[in-house]
Image: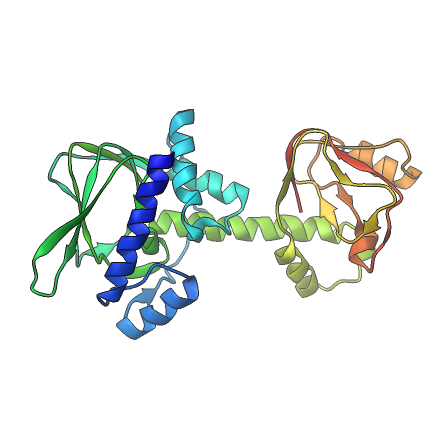
Length: 293
């Protein structure tokens, strides 16, 4: 993956050059939005189908590693939940281009994000005189086009297949449908779980929505202590996957809840911590590697 990382660094340097020439930058989201407004690039607000079901295309372990590595190198995917990342990876599909064929063309609408799987691509920048100059050749693991997933814009560079090339790609509508629908379903699930915690019964629906939006995924390995008896209670958590086990020193009420939820999502802990904090009177262990908030 070192070669892919080097290529990605070169791509970032190229992007800086393109930005200096007056193209849309691909740095921080706020900067992109500001530049988009100045240059007439639309921030995408297209309709998303509530019943959208993301497609899933088979991928081997090596391909998944390649895609995950490319996505990790782009800050745009940092805030995706684990489920969203999995759905995006699953929805990416393969496309082939013969040598010399363009993958993206300067001035055409930008609609897809691409990751090079096999082969190499040449990157061309259009100069002020209209001539296209070859500035970089990229290979397996390199990615480009992520701005197309969020903004209605045009391509600022041309990329052609240097040799026969295979890329993995996803379009803007699919990406946004995954993110929006996943976030909506996730909030509904969290609100329902929060509503079932007696300590939070007095919260209004808007307050539960705010709390649901504040929850973050944390993944623990098998057997790792999520909360420790005697430590300061400074967070609330709920189990979203796999199993959570509690030590025998639980009070009877929590033990009953554990028995009821042992192999289900929604086991909660630390409610009093969320209400103001207290020393923990129980220890909860992760039974199998999974996420909690």
